[in-house]
Length: 602
Image (cartoon, rainbow, N blue to C red):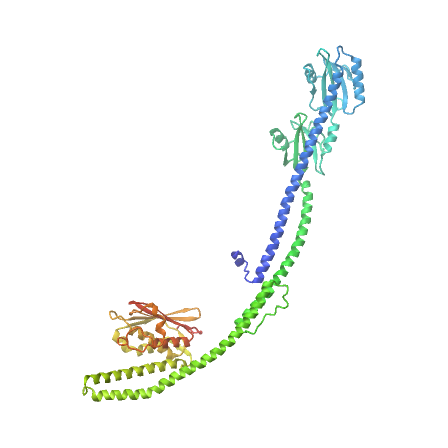
C-alpha cells in the first residue's frame, strides 16, 4: 500500500481520501457486477440445462409410449385371429374396422405364412415383400419393429410393426403388420423446440436424420448424415447434457436420450447466444443501475471526504499559525456541524491547547524576565564584588609579600611557615577572584558577534600556549576550520581553556597529542578536542562543568576549577552545547557545537 501511495504521489490527506473513496466505490461496483454476472450466468446456464433435462425425459417417455402403443395395437389385432382354423373374412373385417377408426397407421395388412399378402387396406393383395425380417421373427413367435425406411408408394419415412397370428396349437398362420409414418413424431418433436434457435430431432445410431429438421436446407431424412459431437457422446455414454458444436456449426446447449430401445437418439438443442440473450439484457440493465448507484456513491464519498478534509485543513492551518508563534489563533468550527464528532472534539482540544500555550507563554515570559533580571543582578553583584575585592586583596598580598622579604629567615621556622601560608592564600584568593570576574564577564562584557576565521583563533591560542607546548613537547593538529559568526575573544578563551587542559592533564609517560576536529551536521558545526591524556571516570562528566568543581588535588594540578564553567557559559551564549567523553588512562574528548549562520569552510 505504501508503495502504491508513493508511486501515485498521494501525499496529501485530500488526495488519499479521494483515492481511497474512489477505490472503495469502484471495488464495491466491480465486486457487485462480478458477483451478479457470475451467479446469474451460472443460474441461467443451470436453469436451461435443468429445463432441457426435464423436457428430454418427457420426450423420451412420449416417444417410447407412442412406439409401445403402436406395437400393442398390432399385437391385439394378431391375438384376435388366434383360432383353430384361419378365418380370412374375419381378419379382413377386423383390419378394415381398425383402419377406419385410427389415424396413425398408413396401412394394415395380413400375409400368410409364406409371406404372400392376402388382405391389405392399400390393395397390396398378392404382393410379396422382399423384406423378410418381420416374417422370420413371426416364425419364431416374436413381434417385430423395423428401422425407419422409405415407403415404396409414398416415398416417406415409415416404420413397420408386425405380430404373428398363431392358432390354438401355437402354429403360425400368418403375420399382421402395419406401416406408420412419422408425422406424429414430427409434431411431438416440434413441441420441444426452444425459442428462435431451438432444434429437436431424431437420428439413428448411424447419424442419419430421422425426423424433419427445423432448419431444412437440403437435408433429407434418411439421406443426411450428421457430423455432430452428440453422436459420439451418445455412443460413448458421455453426460447426456453438454455444450458442443451442432451439425450446423453453432455452439449449443444440447441434451440427448436413447429412445425406441436404443434404435434412435432424441436430440434437443438451443444456441448459447439465445440462452444468454436475456441474461445479457439483464446485465446491461444491471450495469446501468450500478453505474447510477456508483455515481451517487462517488458523490457521497466526496461529501464525506470534504467533511473530513475541512476540519483537518483548519487544524493544519492552526498548527502552522501556532508554529509561527500566533498563540491567539482559534479554529472556528461553527460551520462544520456535519463533520465527524471526533474531529470537532480535536478542533476544540486544539483551541484549548492554544489557550494553554498562550497562558504558559505569558507565564514563561514573566518568569524569563524575572530570571533575566535576577541573573543580571547576580552577574553585576559578582562583577562588583570581585572588582571591589581586588584592591584590599592586593594590599594584603603586597604587605604579606613585603613581610616575607624583610623577615624571611630572621624569625623562627613557624613564623616563616605562617608567612608562606599567608602569601599562598592571598595569591590563590587573587586567582579565584580573577576567574570569578572572568566568569561574570562572559554574559555582561561579551562582544558583538562577527565573522571570525577559526584558523586565526587557533593561531592566537597556540601563540598563547607556546611555552606550555614546547615544555610538554605537545603535538597539536586540526582539520580545516570554518569561518563563523562568533565573539572572537571568547572563542580564543574557549579553545585556550580546552587545549590548555589537554596539555595540563597529560600522561607523564608520553608526549601530548591533541587533535581539533570539525564536522558540519544539520544547521550546526561540531567541534571536538581529543587528547591522549590521563582521562577521568565518565561518571564525573557532568560535574566537571560546575563552577569551582575539581577532580584532582590542587597541589598537583593548579587551577580554581572554574575554567570549564566558563567554557560552558561561552558555548551556551553562542547557542551551542558542550559535553565530554573520557576513558581513564587513555584519552579525553571535549565536544561543543556552534550554530551555522550561513558561513562556509575556508
